[in-house]
Length: 66
Image (cartoon, rainbow, N blue to C red; front, side):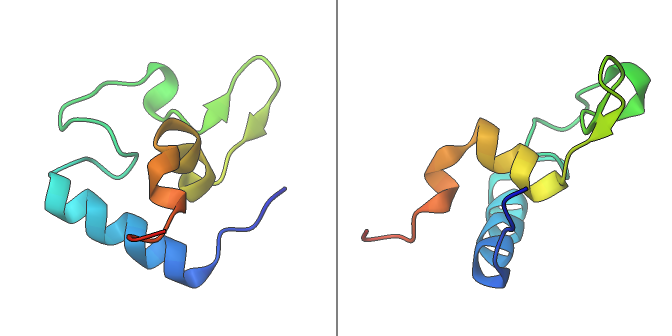
């Protein structure tokens, strides 16, 4: 499992606030089967929230100007 560094976590948290997204990076009011997009009922595995967001928004991996 890839670890998300503290700087990237801060960048994601800032983006969530500024973009008005929910805690998973989706529009407010998004409804998820099972209550969370982090748990895969087929595999029984749970994703890290930051890794989930980065998979859906890979542009957040890069620092501005890189």
